[in-house]
Length: 218
Image: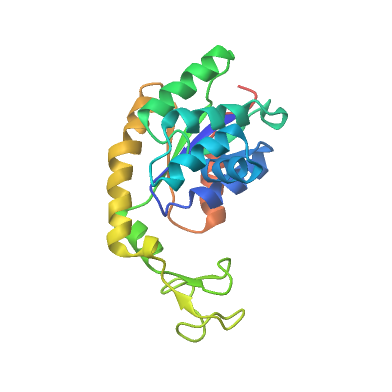
């Protein structure tokens, strides 16, 4: 099964992608992971991406597309994959279509995780990260530490990342509306989009997503 997962920042795409990929026994292909892997391994694409990033420039779509295509060529993706963070814009969506067409393949579904904008802001702006270990994450409302500003696990200081500040989150949402939302209409024209209400517990959202997928026997 070949799936694209979309949704605004804070919708829980990474979490849902991991659960869905495990349930479906297909690889979770994340743009962030692709960049980290290629850069850490020093691949030609990784070196090219790093040169743009070091200069403070955006990595061109051509590099991102090439990384995604290279990953989809790997053996574990032969029977399907779940794309998270790719395609990010119309150009990337059209490139993905061309790639799949050349392979005589097609997407099975585009899952659109739907979360109200105010909830997105609340989810992200409320995050507090431990300075000692960034895997220790708390939330000012949903997962409060026992002592304000102190990590329950190691006693480190909790802080709010610049990327998580409300004004930054709203700017990220503007970029999402401008660049990524148009791909939803693009895929709606192909009758691929399934809107998934992404409020509630993680396992509830996963069950909704699994139930919305077409049968693998279809």
